Each structure stands twice: as structure tokens, then as C-alpha cells.
Amino acid sequence: MNRWWIYQKERFPLLAHGPLIAAFSACAVSFSSLVRHAPAPGWQMYVTAFGVCLLMFLQLRIADEFKDAGEDARWRPYRPVPRGLVTLKELRMVFILAAILQTALVLALDVRLMIVLAIAWSYLALMSVEFFCRDWLKKRPVIYLLTHMGIMPLVDFFGTACEWLPRGAHAPAGLGWFLAASFFNGIVIEIGRKLRQPEDEEEGVETYSRLWGKQLAAAVWLAALVATATSALLAATAIDFTTPVIVTLSIVLGIAVVYVSLYLERNLLGKKIEAISAVWTLALYLMLGLVPLLLE
Image (cartoon, rainbow, N blue to C red):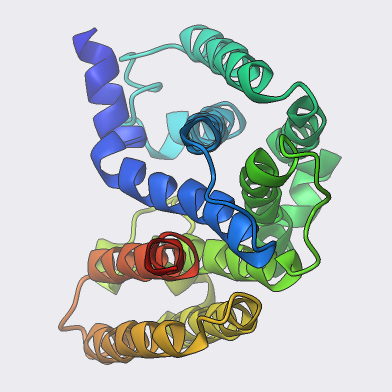
């Protein structure tokens, strides 16, 4: 068990990912009930959304281990799979076990959720084979980024379905901007974790700071924050919670601008940008879901 504990610390740290995914999934369930003016969701809806989402992001990590196995062996031998801590065969079994647990959670709540889960699984499967055009996508990093972030609104949509589908309702009309915020926030997280100072760049490791240069990469990251905030604001209008969302996200955005300035002056490590991405994500999902529900 010790080696699996080491694996999760290195590749899927639960202490870091757990709170973010909990906020992500709880927000989806809460927002769905708020936008429909429905009663507060039941505990099983939250548990199912969190469990399935957590395992989905674990499956995404495992899928990355498979599709990046060759590059990891060549350029990143320190990672768990190349150095022999765990094997791809073992990870395949973990992937399957996660799918079984997801199915059990879904069936315990509402069998119809299997349709929504199957859609997310199908997209994950396409991502795992790089949509059958790996080389073409690798040469087009913007398209690569956008196509891979498509999984975010799908997982978030599943979270909302945990509220409206068991209650016999239809997907509420106000979900569009909420799912858009999830999509853009995925870009915030993805770019934020791949911004580095020149001395921290690794041979064979693709980062946006190396691909686009620090200034452009940081500018795109800030643009993604603005796009996320705009979508979140429009989503907040559907639940009459615009002012708190504006104030909260404006504060975090201001901090992000300061961080970017320090990063560009080489006074801040790229890891700090990743950290503020996590703070932004937590603030976003708390303000669009749990906080307005608790204040209602």
C-alpha cells in the first residue's frame, strides 16, 4: 500500500485535488437546484457527484499515464511508471475498479444517470487515443488544449444531472453559462500548471511558457481568467447572486495580476501561478454553488 500512497502523492494528490473536486461537484449539484428554484439537494446527490467526479479525474490521470508512457520513459524517468513504482497493468486495474465504483454510485441514485456518465466516458476514451489524430493535434497546441478541455463541462454536466435527473426534471435552461465557466476554468488550471521560469524548464516537457514564451502564455492565462469570470457572472444572474460573485472573483483576479507581474519579472516561481489557479477555482465554485445555497 505504501507505493500507492506515494503514487497518489506524486500524480494525484488527494489533499490538493480533493477539496477542489468537492467544491466542483457540490457546486454543480447546488447550482442546478438554485437555477430551478428546487428544494435543497439530498446528501446522496452530493456523494454521488463527488465520488464519480473524483474517480473521473483519477481516470484522466491514468489515461495520461498510458498515452504519455513513451515520452515519460524517455524524458521523465523519475515518474512512478518509468521508475517501476507501479505498472501500467496495475493502473489499468485501478481504472476498471474506478469505473465499477462509479457505476455502483450511479445505480444507487438513479439508473438514468448511466447515460450521462457514458457520454463522459466516451469523451474520455476519445481523449485517451488523442481523437485518433495525435500527431496532428500535437502540432496544433491551441486545438489540443481546447479539445481536451471539453471533458470539463461534460463532467460538470454529470454533476448537475445528479440533482435534476433523479427528481424527474429536465436539464435547466440556465446551465449554459455555468458549463462555459467550467470549460474556461479548465483552461485556467491547465495553463496555470504549465507556466515556468526558464531555469525550471525540463528537456522534453512541454509547457506553455516554453511553447508561447512567458509573456504570451501569462497573457493567455489571464484571458482565461477573464473569460471564466465573464461566464460565471452570466451564470450568477440566473441565480440572483451577481454582486458576491463579482466582488469575490475581482479580488482573486487582482491577486492573479500581481502574481503574473512578479512571474514576468522572474521574482515568482511558476508553481505560484498554479497555486493561484487553485484558489481561483475554489472561489469560483464556492460562489456559484454552496455559498448562495447556504445563504438562501
